[in-house]
Image 1 (cartoon, one colour):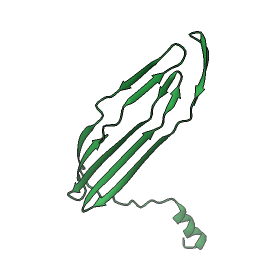
Image 2 (cartoon, rainbow, N blue to C red):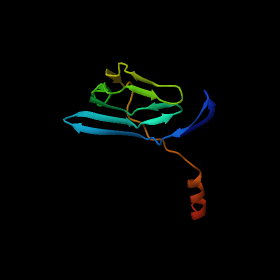
Image 3 (tube, rainbow, N blue to C red):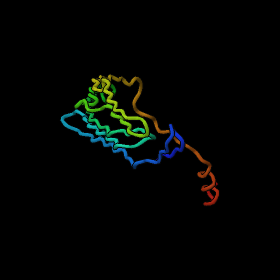
Image 4 (cartoon, one colour):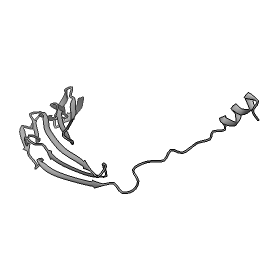
Length: 141
């Protein structure tokens, strides 16, 4: 990612840095429960005059299904280590500042779902016309 600009506040900017995002989810099954662990990492990057520091977090959840998978309960915790924050600095041209922004990112969630109705789907018999054509070709009219 690059940024170029001429004539900003009496100076020129030509900077940039490659950046990447890495996300992974691990699903676990144990004793009738489903668990998941999520990891999210966003590397440092330069965006215009701003240097954005890396961001990362780990989230987890555990759930269970009841009543033939019609009733589901899931309990999750986002950002369990409370590490997700925005750190931004700028030391370009006449700027010289550092911003540290920390919101409430640790969040406990409870999801409850119930699926109403018939969970089995009847298979329909589709006729395409190929059956009639096959009968004419074999002479069984």
